[in-house]
Length: 121
Image 1 (cartoon, rainbow, N blue to C red):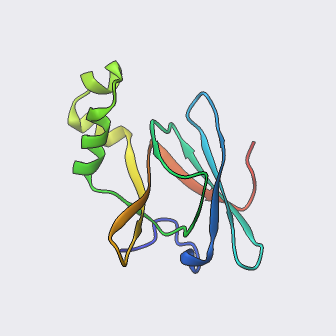
Image 2: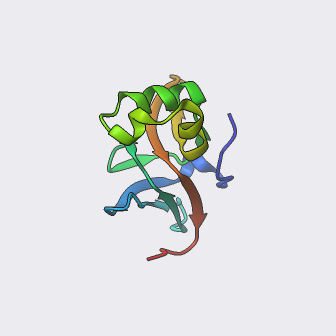
Image 3: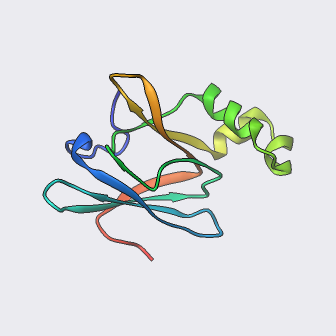
């Protein structure tokens, strides 16, 4: 499973939820074992299954089937009335798996995500 953001040594980073605003912009703060800081900014987040803090930053893109199943389970009229293609064109499922246990640790559905070395306010 590849790392979506190509973060060096992704298992060595401590992640924390920094902010989530009313537009669905989610900022995660990542700190390495050497105190380097990175930010992952998700735009248009509609689903979060995360802790406030966790270890590991190896994000992968989840399957279309899982993304649709989660979106369809949400009680949102706009999501319920959209076609599968519309939803898949608009949203992506980002997740972190515990590879040894194959458990999903983190799931985020958002329009887009990017990594930054700076806190973009």
